[in-house]
Amino acid sequence: MLRLLVLMFCLAAAGCSAAFDLTPYQIPASDTIRIPDEILYPQYFRETDEVTFENIIAEFRSRFQFFSGLRSDSSERICYKMQRRINKGLERLVASAGQLPFNSIDDRMIFDDESPLSPFLRPMPVKHSEYCSFKSFGDLKNGGTVYCAYHGIDVGSSFYKTHLHEFEVARPAFTAFDLVELLIFFPALLVIPVTWLVLKKALENKPPPESNKQG
Ligand SMILES: [Zn+2]
Image (cartoon, rainbow, N blue to C red; front, side, top):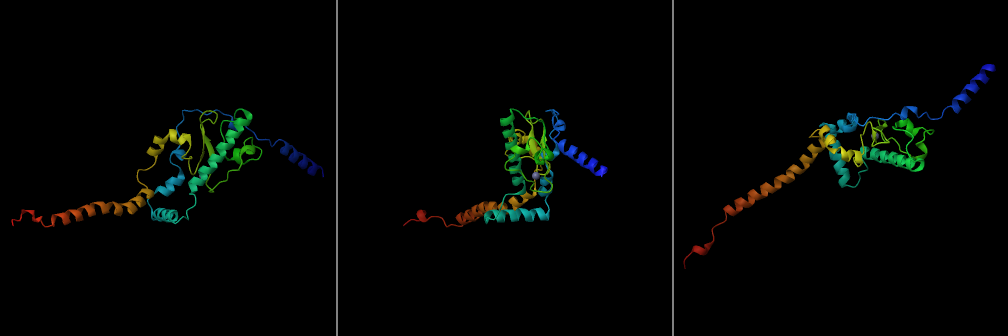
């Protein structure tokens, strides 16, 4: 009986001390550290960019669904939408508290009901993929940004636009997307020179005008 009472006391004490510990999130981040690969060229694009049979079929299917009106938002776009929800929550927290009480975030900060950010996340972001993991890079009090370790960063964010060149350099010049574009549009591009050649031949074979004939 005594053991049970001790256990209940310990559980109650643990419950009371379950307040969200902000200490690990209050470390200011340096703004000189290199942008990690999981932002510049995230795993999702490493998988879908590769020129493989599966990726080429997926690209063709995506275009068919787009033209037939069946296409829903792509995986990365849904994740970017969730990142915008998190950014909105951060803005609301700043508007309410005057400043952020932390310098970085992660999944725990977002999904733990006890976190100071949680009440400001409406609607609540969800993970579109089991691989999604929300994090921050840099100092959120000073130009830092939110991203997903699997899908990377929202391409509409100011951080992406500011570092556009670095993103472009990190990604390969030719991907499965580019190959499918080429397969679709190359035949169309051939029509122009072929039409020009046919017209040229037709003009060459045309008999000369009869204006030189003398009556
Ligand atoms: Zn994601």
